[in-house]
Length: 121
Image (spheres, rainbow, N blue to C red):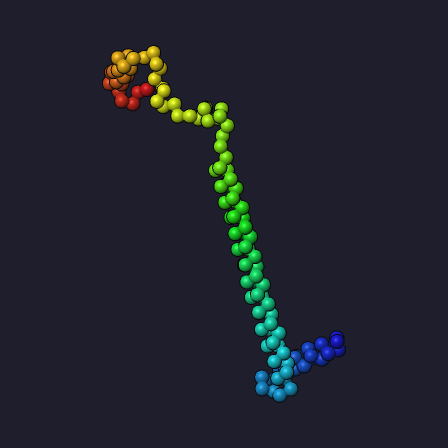
């Protein structure tokens, strides 16, 4: 096998120096072209399958993240957390304050703001 390989390389060395149409070199050039085309096709196929594998891995990761997100959206907090986070905006005013007292507080705040300027706190 090594002997044939050495003969082939010796023939290739002499064929490179000769013209393309030299009859004994046709087999060398045909085999060289076949090897070159095979190498290119192998690289193209490997790149194609590597890309397909990457896309498949990305789809799996996206699907996993989507499922985790949907599961987290379905979880409900316990009663204590729900009470703590409940809207309290309508119950801000203390029940012991009446409408007149709230109106007086607002007027006092506006009067203070007018005397001290709009940017004072």
